[in-house]
Image (cartoon, rainbow, N blue to C red; front, top):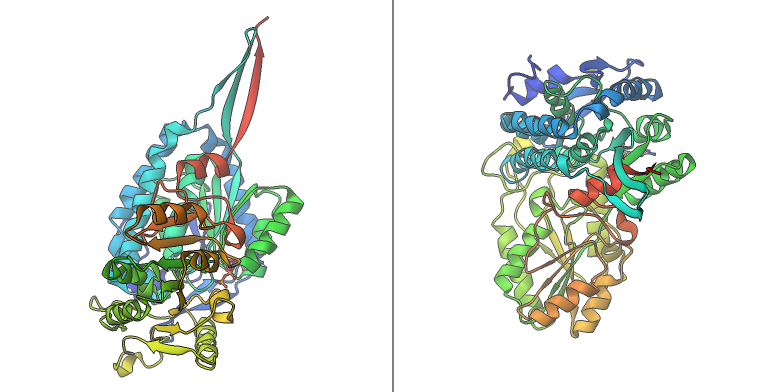
Length: 499
Ligand code: ADP
């Protein structure tokens, strides 16, 4: 068993066992103080692959103290030097893409070719981007008075608590540690209970470059490990990606401490398909936007497809044909397009929505692709993607975030109705409009109530583009220069009396 960070270990089972039972605190792998652990399960087989530490407040305390000890020196490291170290982190990760892709596939059931490998490549890209932003941590001079030199400087906040979900654990880790570290903060990461291993491995790999204590990770459950991290007096900022309910709990605790938060929460993103849209392009965009390759387990999934009545049936047919051609199967198999659902609880939840959809009068369930015939995968949490047609926007399926491969397709006859339907939601993360008409494209872009709007495409979040939600989809932005400056620094005004 080898968890030597210098050597990529392509045997994911072996690496999972080598990392088993550990947090990463103050530059080294560390077991939890309580000695308690919980099982990490491969959702494609139902088999245990490792234990994760059931970290509690004591472990969080150790990690926060390590981060506090490291913070002064890290903040005093010249910004460009910090940036160079983060770019060095990106370079290191680029040589670990394959092992990270396999490890995250093992613990999440995401297909290696379509999901896990691109994610592993993406984290290096995100850190590379942030490392290059270090010189932008500059302040301004203010034309206040001729006898007073007045300037602003940007300073780090201190220790950042970063709470992660399981759906893209490494990429979301990179979105959070990139701006934190470059801005001079140190970090305590709390990984998601379903996917602690790849995140732990990334932090261990980065410890070859980062001073000890600068980046720490604890695994555990929300109430026992996440909550004490948010409440810890040594944590000065929380960045969270997860559910609306948990986001609200975190926001309340942060309010008591008067610390800033960034919250990236759920979504129920609309995709408006106008009658003049290029339907092939729109269907391909629907497949990409719905993240079928990740079983729809994405907060930005285009799960409400609002389609003009004149092209509705043709559009549904084209999307179905594309998803039918996708292979559901063993996530480690290069031929597989779609892997599994993350956990039995999530599986039951998604199946519950599908059952509810089937029993709605006037609704048709358009099921796509086929389940794997391989008996060895019998315990795997596979689900056939399904599109429900004939729904109304006030149905439970159209209002609640399902986080699975379940699409609501709704018809419209007028552009005004389409916009109203698109905006009639508690969420506002992403949206898209599909049309050849420039005026409609621009009008919809301005009127759609979402933080990330696209025309005739459905790309995922990219370094350099501010990403974050309106309404219940969250607070603050990620993945950009503005995100780093606004959310990971504080500004000081300095006045120097020259009289
Ligand atoms: P999901 O239902 O998708 O797992 P959650 O919002 O419950 O979404 O979880 C996202 C992350 O938030 C996980 O790392 C989880 O452990 C953590 N978490 C859950 N509850 C809390 C809490 N009360 N305080 C802090 N973190 C929490």
